[in-house]
Amino acid sequence: MLQFFSKYKLFAIVLTMMSVVIISIIYSVLTPIEVLPIYQPSQVSAALVAQDIRHQKKYHTISDFSLTNQEGQTITQDTYDGKIYVADFFFTTCQTICPLMTSNMLELQDKLQDNPEVLLLSHTVMPEIDSVSQLKKYATQKKVNPTKWNLVTGSKQEIYNLARKQYLVAKETPGDPLGLVHTENFVLIDTQRRIRGFYDGTQTQEMDRILHDIDVLQNQAKKSIFFGLINY
Image (cartoon, rainbow, N blue to C red; front, side, top):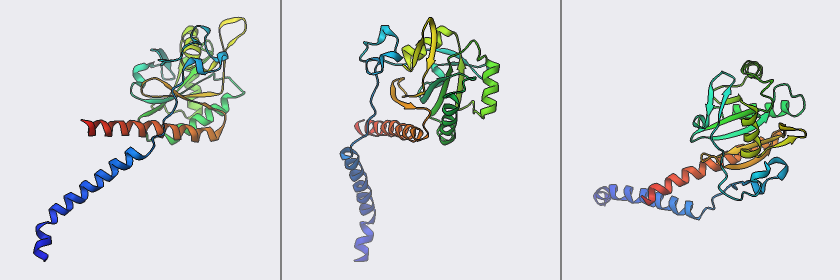
């Protein structure tokens, strides 16, 4: 009897492993996958979107950009290529909602420190004040990690276009064609440059929602790779 079981031991092990794999595949297929919405300009408050794209209902992605961070480095779309990231708009001398937003972004920085696939990006809405040296001073005071979080400045035109034509999160300043009133919004961008979520950057509990949604995006990517290999 022992010789019989010994003879078929390898077969039993292989059969068990195959059963585990098959059960796992069936479970993955039957388990609903949580999917985040993909936001388009037409779905966002018109006050936050440039007039010429308010009608757009599909294919919206974050366009190419070139900005300068607190280290004096050029930051482009390539810096965030293949990454999930959280973006917002602020200015260093803001005394209203910005301190809360910075505090919550710091929380994200700490909790995402060991996740190299996720980055942070903050744009100043007052580039005439927030020079590279000013951003560096602010970053040092707040303990911003430049490998995880870029504070960026650029021309007023580019910042305006990014805020109102790309991330869809700022209001116009009356009487100033390039003036911006930034909001408390944090924006979640996926690896394909699509907007997947808006969050109140002044609310601590909203950071948990961002972290959850980042997990959703990353798990969805893992499942896509897994099923791609199975299909292959």
